[in-house]
Image 1 (spheres, rainbow, N blue to C red):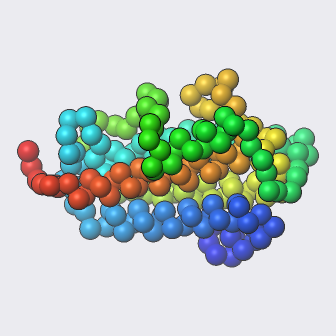
Image 2: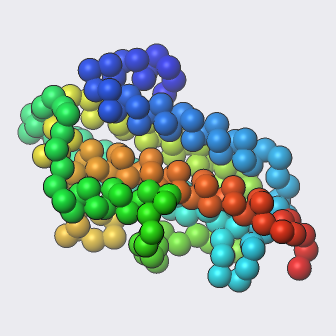
Length: 198
């Protein structure tokens, strides 16, 4: 979704901002990965720490499992005519959930098992392409939510159907979560001995 599609969300500046942020993240990921070779992409700073590739694979796992859930929620909202104009107000739990995804959140949640990255050597081109396509798909899905009530429509977490999160919170949380792990991946490239054989 390019600049023209972002402009089409003019009646929802919050959504337009999220789509624009996804475009920035796609460029940031390409700038991060392009200079790397497969050894650097898979290099881990320690046995319990993730490589650049694992950071991105984790995002592929989370985004990939969430995409169909968000699309289903949007389809239900359209069917039920759950429309509203923002700005939207969210409850305490929703705001906490969103804030817990921020890069500077002091006590980040432990990643559920279904979202954990592969431990084997990752194919750099495949992981990078999958991440790029996931951000493109997320931007498209956000565009589909134009005019819907982002606070009233909820989508279940892929981890538990009992965890119901407002659509707008999901959108914001994905952007923040992607930011967090892109920053984590960049920190890996600044580690002493980055890319060296151990």
